Amino acid sequence: MKTRILGAVLGIAALSGLLVPSPAQASDGVSSARANYTDGGAGSVRTTVDFVNRKKVVFRNFTVRDICPGDNFPVKARIFWTHTDGTSGYSAWKSDTNGCGDNGTNFGNITRTGTKPISKVSLEVCIYTRSGGILSFAFSAPRDNQYT
Image (cartoon, rainbow, N blue to C red; front, top):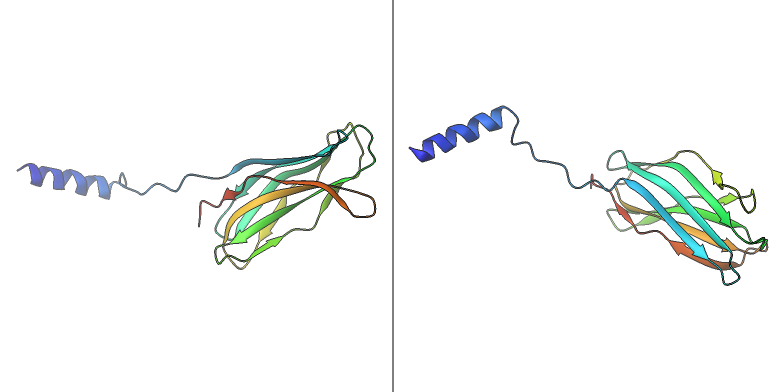
């Protein structure tokens, strides 16, 4: 009798959509990284990661900021992604050219769509010399794509 009642309850719940599997924990959200240099200079990158599906991710309000005491060292940042097959790629560098003391350069939304599923993304920020030498760099914690 109890088995028959339990079966009926489960059957009704399944038919009414109550037993739909829930999606994995979402990994969308704010990502940031900050690089520091010994003379007090620093640089940062910040964006909101929005995974749309297995192959598409939007980086909202991708902002690069030069935080410095007038050190004359520019700051640049880029996006890294890893595919589910282990291969990876990265975006072009984006630089804050506004100098110190502002809110940085907001590049708006950057969309990455590929032919392979993207398993995770992270950010890199770099303080560099005008001749291109790297002084300091940092990576954000990776964000996992909840659709893969």
